[in-house]
Length: 130
Image (cartoon, rainbow, N blue to C red; front, side, top):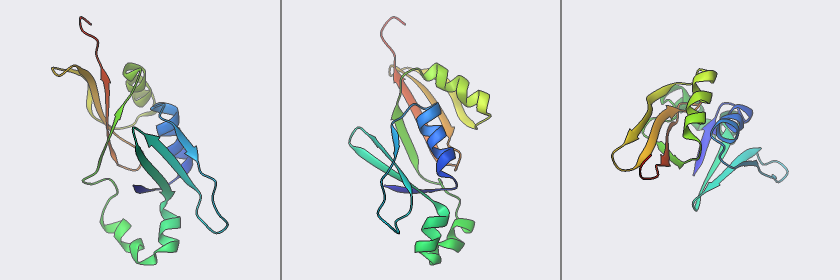
């Protein structure tokens, strides 16, 4: 899956820094756009800057202005230290849709938006008796 983002550095800081998900800058071929690769549980997400997407596919330029990124797409992640992540999101002033909550199906869950408006659901399994 490839997602367009405004700034790779901001995306890398959010996913790698705040969420502590493995995100790597990919080695690129000459002429290919710089991008980030995030792999988790057999899924691969590639982040490419919007400007590079528009340069390669000019017809998409107007669509980025009409259709906001992230509408209809939800990224789910199982994380560790969800309480620390929640605090970091608050500290950074990032938008939280549903704050951290213990769910009856045995997880702590938090819904937030990444810097580009993609909906991110974070969950951490809760041990019994906690």
